[in-house]
Image (cartoon, rainbow, N blue to C red; front, side, top):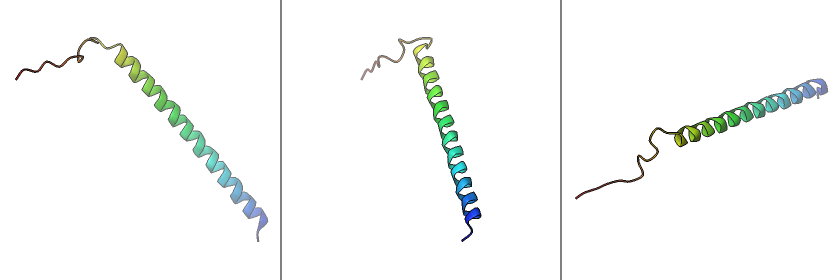
Length: 58
């Protein structure tokens, strides 16, 4: 058993996992910001009264 090689492999694996977690956190934060921006945009639409009713005649 090669202890130094095993130790390095475990360290590299831990680093890769930590990097993956950080990337996912960044993506999650960006998606949250995009969602908040979309809600703001919808709230401040030019004509908020449009789309509230549907008139149908048969």
